[in-house]
Length: 80
Image 1 (tube, rainbow, N blue to C red):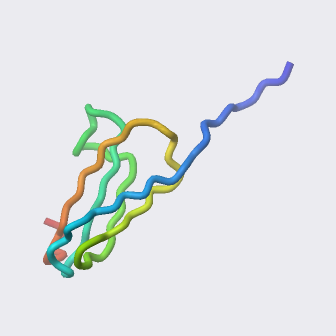
Image 2 (cartoon, one colour):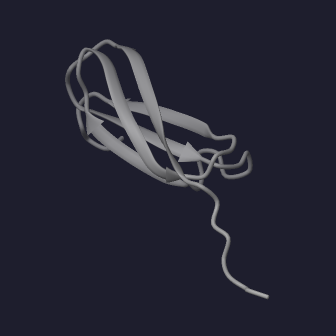
């Protein structure tokens, strides 16, 4: 009999934010894996420079499941 760890297959999740109105500042995207922690305790977070029309962010090493995402455009890059 063998004992060992069985790991869930991990994937990447690509988030595309459309209709970005300004090319200034940063876009912050947070990934949450349960309703209780939504906007309080993120699973992963990414920040990228803003650009007109569309921004893409990729989260790596994600176990397949249900997730929620929050997006914030910090137009003046002051972290507020």
